[in-house]
Image (cartoon, rainbow, N blue to C red; front, side, top):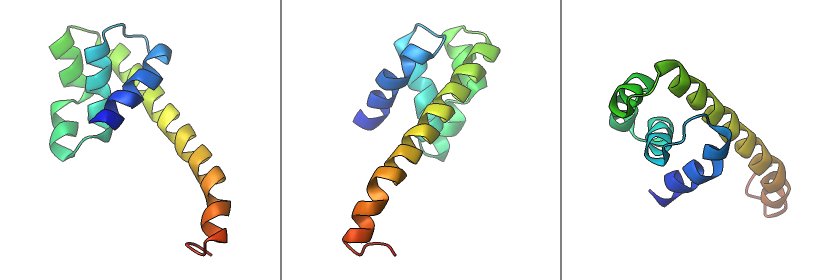
Length: 89
């Protein structure tokens, strides 16, 4: 749960929505279990927080881009370490 909140805090400045709870819901829709992904779909978030679905969809796309960028950075930084420790070849 703390990681999802941290991702919200990290990504919300690049999102259009101002409501931190709506941004958290978008993050749960991305990082949560299958049930969370259903409960926090862009449609459900938009409906629940009275936001336009297009804005929620755009912010969801922003979150996906940020997550991919962070993953790429982690791979670049951790691969040499894991190779050195013989965790990967």
